[in-house]
Amino acid sequence: MKETVLDVLMYLFENYQHGEFSDTDNQDTLRDELTAAGFPLDEVDHAFTWLEGLSEQRQLPLDFSAGRSMRLYAREELAKLSPECRGFLLNLEQLGILDSVNREVVIDRLMAFNNEIDLERVKWVCLLVLINQPEAEEAFEHVEDLVYYQGDYLH
Image 1 (cartoon, rainbow, N blue to C red):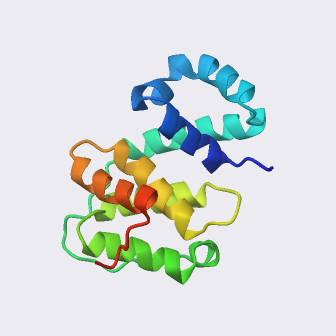
Image 2: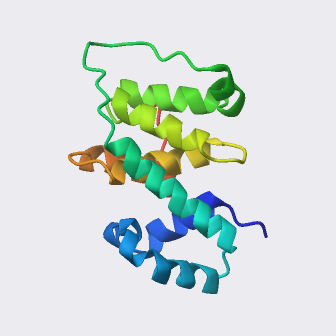
């Protein structure tokens, strides 16, 4: 079975406390544990790079408070994100689960993957982005329900 970066990230999310996998001092220990669990070292390294990118995105001074705006996708984003994935993100934003800043972080982190993006991956990335956001507990819980219980995001 081909393990991917998202598989490593999902494993970290499900088996470790957030502080354990986001702490750079702990990465060597986690790297050893993940490779012992069967994940390829290159995918583990990519996962830690992905998490570092997420941390960097959190620190960017993004401000979309000027009002409601429409997101126009770049050609590369359109090629990688299906209409279903884009619709899901739009719906989360319309429901107030994702704000425009978190949407941009989600899109950036999705574009960082080398493999195909499907709706399940989008849900997981939303979850991983929201767990890193202060004051996003309620939004996190909504997306967690979608990930674990296959909730219908249209209602």
